[in-house]
Structures are given as C-alpha cells and as structure tokens.
Length: 130
Image (cartoon, rainbow, N blue to C red; front, side, top):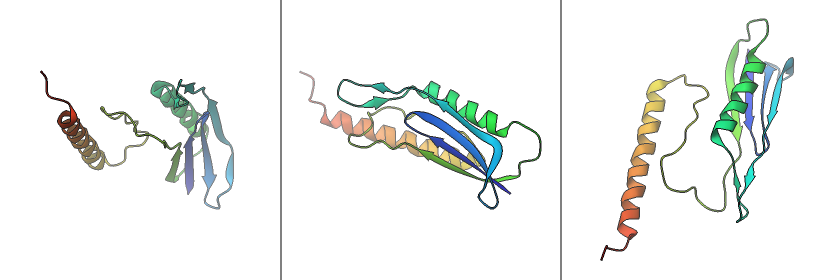
C-alpha cells in the first residue's frame, strides 16, 4: 500500500509518495515553484493554468519510475482563501483524480445551482433601470 500526498501551496506545488508505514519513498518527491501575483489591495492571485501545470508536473514525476506503486489513498492540501469572498461567477474546478464520475457530476450540478442562486440574488440587489 502507498499514499500519494499532494500539496498546492502559495509558492509551490509538491507531491510525494509514502509507504504503508508512513515513510517517504526514496526518489518519489517533486516540487514545482511558481510566483503569485500581488494585487494593489494586498491580495494574492494565482494563474489557474500555471497551478494545473505545476500539479501535473509533480504527479508525473512522482508516478514515473519502475515498480507497481499500489496507491490506495490520496491526500490533498491546498491554500485557503480568507478575508473576502471569491467573486461571483462560474467556479474553476481542477479534477486531479476522478474516481467517481457520478459524484463529480452531482458536485458540478450543485455548483451550477449555487451560481444561478447567486445571480438571482445579485439581480434583486440591482437598482431598477430608469
């Protein structure tokens, strides 16, 4: 048994493979750095395409090599946004692993319903056109 760990952080993405005892597997670690953009109001932004490239490069490097890995679990950690909410609009979803297409379809449907609700609520707050 092996566990694949993926961390998408503020300055880099990292992936590593651990055996059943929790020991890092030699040669199965990868880190790809990237630079966030700082906004004038002190916020931090990331290019979603760059994040996806970094994650893919990390996973490709960790999964490359000889031997059957026997991955039975995946742990994913990402940075968290705080302070102010994300702007309204369609969410960006990166599916790194998709073992259950039906569950992911339900998740996407729920996000679409939330986006429609957000739009309806925003329309109610808009002043009437004169």
